[in-house]
Length: 132
Image (cartoon, rainbow, N blue to C red; front, side):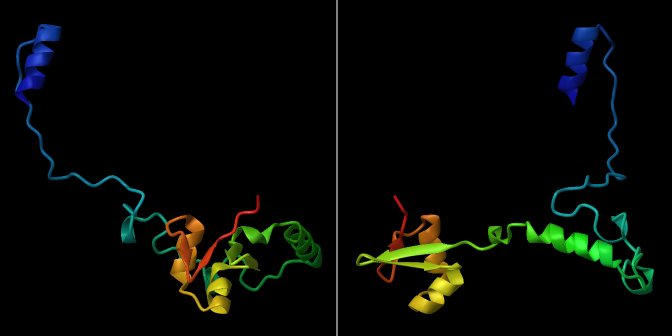
């Protein structure tokens, strides 16, 4: 702390002062991993289920349901699935998911994921197939 007072006094031509720091009331700032948990959370105690839910006892109109249905039709739901293409001895196999590939080929699922992520070159003789 002495360097701060020396720097300030040199720059601003001030007499050095004593600064006392009291951190007994210090509260941690919110972090990405939950600085506001429990009672510190703004939503604490505001139950939104059962009778307290704003939609409790209500239904969407047929018009609303048809609009939501129509909007969902255009969505691409494949972003959750990771398609897998593996090759072994010239045979190429395509799967909808890594789990499906592991089941059908009798492989370990994390190993299939490692092959697809480039962490492994092969598993059970199967390698990642890249069309090209």
